[in-house]
Amino acid sequence: MTSQTDGQTGSETGEETAERTVFLLAHTGRPAAIRSAELVVQGLLRSGLGVRVLAQEAADLPLPPEVELIPEASPEALDDCELLIVLGGDGTLLRGAEFARASGVPMLGVNLGRVGFLAEAERDDLDKVVDRVVTRAYEVEERMTLDVRVRSNGTVVHTDWALNEAAVQKVSPERMLEVVLEIDGRPVSGFGCDGIVCATPTGSTAYAFSAGGPVVWPEVEALLMVPISAHALFAKPLVTSPDSVLAVEVQPDTPHGVLWCDGRRTVELPEAARVEVRRGAVPVRLARLHHASFSDRLVAKFALPVSGWRGAPK
Image (tube, rainbow, N blue to C red; front, side, top):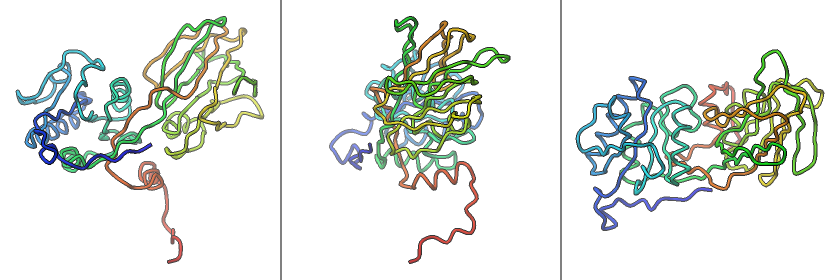
């Protein structure tokens, strides 16, 4: 789902631009991120926008005194912010997604890492990013998330969420995880494996892709279930309705597994755990600058060979 911004600056709508505030989140462990953050902050302040930064990150950034420092990383830190700009690689962008989901503020990612499918811009686009933010020349797109429940003996013992994927994985390298897969309350297959990845279309280019899953265009609403190194004849990736409920039941005679959500949050699974995954109630909102097709993004991010393409006849 995509919505167009009004395309008007604060002065055009009768508002003072100084009342507009942008939150900046950066991977300060990288010199490139520090320099990029400095350029973005300077550009926004020159245009009359307020900038807000976490205090723990500010210590590593050369920031002018006008920047507002926030002591804690909480959803309330983005109160009254128009946008969340995130500078970094995939891990930093996923950290930003946690802020974006909890606050409802759109996230604009600038990729300073390798692939960065969640990012809308690259390091060389910083001037364009600032200009588009100042003039509100961007669109906001909602991305599906996952709600995750872990049950033990029928009781919910843990809840979580994910933008990319929820992965049930083995802990012991010498033994497989024995699981039974369920979709919409019915068993589908059981086998030994290294794990199962349940993903969104956004996550189809992340861990699920590495496990052999299909690439799903972001506007397609679906859930993915992708086995990891399964010992079975029928262990293909499955694509289901966005309204389906996926479940992974870990068998009692197998070592305990572990649940990872977006590769950031983890919990050890109890014996004979049941992990349920469904469409998330709260999406993540992403700010978009470009109208390029996902096909072009796919080719650019993975450096896919397309030489020889002639296109449709005119």
